[in-house]
Image (cartoon, rainbow, N blue to C red; front, side):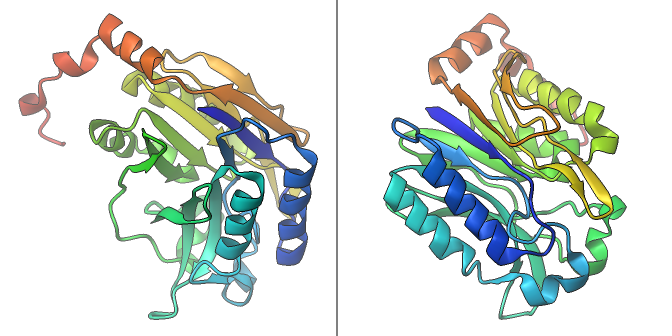
Length: 265
């Protein structure tokens, strides 16, 4: 599949401005032949957590309708990053990622399990309670996680054992831990022998500076394309299931596993 990651600077607390920015990026970019477009974490609001109750989407709206319109208009599947999302039944606010197909249909959604203590997420957000699952797009199997989830390899192995050959990581990863970003992304690709598609924001946003460096990593751990940490960018690449199969045959780690010896899994 042909993938494009849209790396842009998320405006703090400016929902209308961020939605307008995404629409403009879709208008500017040549998406002919693109199969999947990827956005970053919390792209509608940024980390304006003190006002999150007021500015969050409600039951994914209006973000879901806007992304659905873009998917149909440009004939692309969209991994729509994540948004702050109030669930009406409980009033809780979650950090929820979602995926829309070319026909504008909701394919999958996932609320972030691991909340970031360094960004005070647990004070303002509820943690997701549903386990990660895979989803299908046009015959390929994918996984999706959010930012801090990257530090928990169990999620990636779970998704891989459920059939994922590509896992999307949507993030607002800080510059202070920039080295961890690439190291962990490459590790997740190598240890699961699959593609990692990682979308991040960049730049100084109020009291945080974000690392950028959105990237596409192949199943052998090679960085196939990446953005820098200072500018808006489009990262492009292609996933190939036959390449995943080749790597897994060349280094057959899944055949070599001794699950009965791993008491913690």
